[in-house]
Length: 486
Image (cartoon, rainbow, N blue to C red):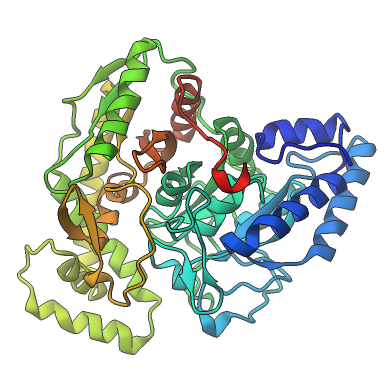
């Protein structure tokens, strides 16, 4: 069997397949060997169907030989267990669904399958994709490939591990509260939260399978996780589009800039309402300095015309409403009952969770109008700036913490305790306004764990965020092979 670098870019692996330097079958078997070597320790992949994968690889080899290769022909991938995959257990991290095997792919999975990928299996998620770590009673605990004492993040934690270690060429993740961006930071890969509505989320959990809607759930997106920016550009056109995999997606806007010279960059590295560690803030500023040295116009004082607290409150109320919609009625009622304890302007996580769970049509309409105002402010901002750099999360990778009560968990911000749900704060800026945002590594922390930056771009201009990611790769950032895969 030829030697294959499984942590090379998916783009270069595809080129190797099309040039017939190795076959899809050989690439798949090498990937299986990697999974067998690493997954027992990392526990990222929780379901596989190797016979089906081998059949897909054989079909890919037939198509390549016949000159009929599809856009992603023969690339072996895993799928986050939040998405339905026909013929594979699709639990959403819920023990009650552990043995649930759907007959139909989620919409985004169908688009990938139609593009020729080889689907190996499913990657672990927390229960209902509702945590910033990846573990659940049905499948156990996933470990970070940089240090097994740390979590890979969540909810796309298993996905980020699979990509970081070469157990998948790329992955399909979902993001409601930084579920793509935070694991990308924790594991040192690239994760793209797409513009809302660009990729269909039909067939994803949340909501639970029996409560699905034809329309994409508010705030939630599907997007790719990859090792290199060029892979995001490769995969995004396949994912973009409606539920019907055979209907082409929209034309994706070209990046505003292909090179750093002239790129207009705003840097929002810290915020009193949403504290971050010095290391996290410094990584954001370092990304700005590298772009400035390459010719970008960088402004650390520029801000959109709204208060962070306004953006966060609007996002958090809607996010908690989305999550509560899929909860068992008794659990939802218990959360709703807490709302009376809090003042109307209370921005604590408990207060926002309770108020969001009690979402009424009237409150939803108020939130909708406030979101429109935020979007208008973002649009004005992006007339003068091309992207905004900010933290992906308040901290770098965290050690495992499985206290049952989220509100009892704490983050250490340079010696000051902060609530665990502060993970939502920096997610809120892009998600609440439906904007695309890319998490990309900048460099290591003092503990040797990855640190990154979040690149927020204008609505519908996902490729501008990817282009800035490519610039940062050229300037010394980007993916590095973690110790577990070295």
